[in-house]
Amino acid sequence: MCLILFAWRPGHALPLVVAANRDEFHARPSLPLAHWDEAPGVYAGRDLEAGGTWMGVGPGGRFAALTNIRDPAQPLGLRSRGELVAGFLRGDRSPEDYLGEVAERAGEYSGFNLLVGDAERLYYLHARQPAPLELGAGVYGLCNAALDTPWPKLLRARQALAERLEAPHPKRLLELLGDPTPADDAQLPNTGVGLDTERLLSSVFIASAHYGTRASSALIVRADGRREFHERRFGPNGARLGEVRLKL
Image 1 (cartoon, rainbow, N blue to C red):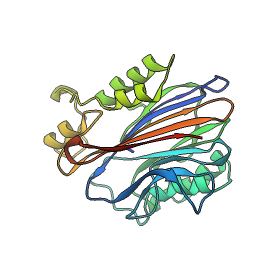
Image 2: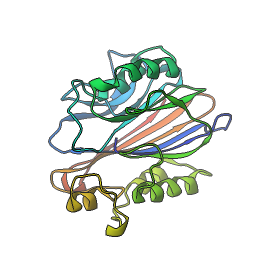
Image 3: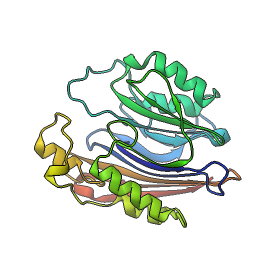
Image 4: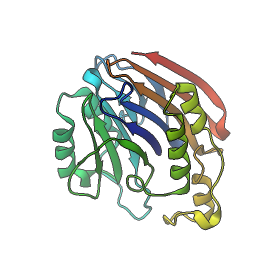
């Protein structure tokens, strides 16, 4: 994932609402959102190059999602970041314990932001910070820096999510993820990738021939444990490829 908007509201009828875009090279093969036969209760897309995933849900209200950290100077990690999401969804460790263990070996991976939670708690780990953070109630945005770094697309999309929380239907969440508006040059971050690439990456929905938004995901979790999980998939230049709708 390269953009995750989420509302965490413990005690609310809809405690977790997530809208997220996965941005990736179109040449990297993947499978759409589905049940993992070898991992009962796990529902996620799958990266066919390394076997992990970018966002998913698991038994007992488990949820996990990940973004990378944009830094062309960072060393290439020895392991795939997608295994961090898959490992939590498949396992039974508490969110805090799992992220504590991940923090100790974060140097094995290229930079990442990782969210993991269950029905009662939600935690965040930045690969370059020493300890996981338990999140309180709020509306958050996560892109390719740290949590709530005020990049233009994050601010715009986070506000759009907040405006939809009174009636957060999956269709409305997917609509906000389709915003192709680029940021003004004066607002662009300087992450070391060059001005043209900063412009391309500055929109909520990214469309180009070789790289772009591959999947938009909407997840709504109810207090009684029921979940709606929708995924809309895209090809080069934003061509729509299909949609998966799950009620769990």
